[in-house]
Image (cartoon, rainbow, N blue to C red):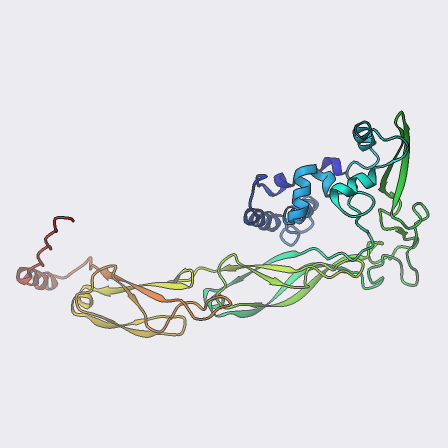
Length: 379
């Protein structure tokens, strides 16, 4: 029941003043934790996943969020408190009207729409929910882009009844309780007059139709969970935990509404020796004391293959060189590439022979270190 719902901010683990980005990040984290694909046959996880999606649907919509912040569940859920009699008593004495009072008109002035709590037509086309999945790619695949086939569970129209919920050869019938309106009026006589309220029809759950012969494949729901293989394009330059949105591959809509989207979170495996910083690539090159002292040409790996880097004589430890030709990562949906930076690591030998010690000592005797530069007055 609606009265047992948890606060939407509590569901996503954010404060009431959370920003749009904070709400989105919290949703992704919670949805991933309770996703049915990661928790098969876990009814509790499935319920929390649905609860998470419901909370995000409201908090990600500025208008719904504003109504929720002001009125709570009553601002976004037309069934909240239905049949409790609380609204009639709460508003009746404050307006001082005689005769019939239609609380549906009062609430429609608060929430918009006509009739009921928000006036949403249950038979109007409704967009399907978005779904989420994940994919893991290598450093090179993320840098250059690739194609990937993934399997996801989608809620789709039943192939036997084509989404109607009625057995093949039959069709839903007009609800005799509400005559197809989806709502029923309840009148209560009070000292102030007759109070009229409107609530969702219990028999048809607000659809205005009833199914006398349910489809056996979907048990009258009109929807079935189906495993589907989907080809997706991973764009060049995508970074870790970024999302690829595949339009129209989420859950099917209702009453002819469009399908939701598939949101694929991309995880990138760490590279053995490359490190990414934005669109730049960093690489550490180990050289010997002799190479650092005398200079050398060394091979440097890049995303496009090995290149030669000239190490000038007297190169110091931790000195950084930039490779020519923009050897970094392709900018996502943009022009150009980043850079590749090479940090020099000078290896100090741990074990030397007596002959090597002798040569080093001779070198040390003949070596004159540079004099430190004088510091100016202002330095």
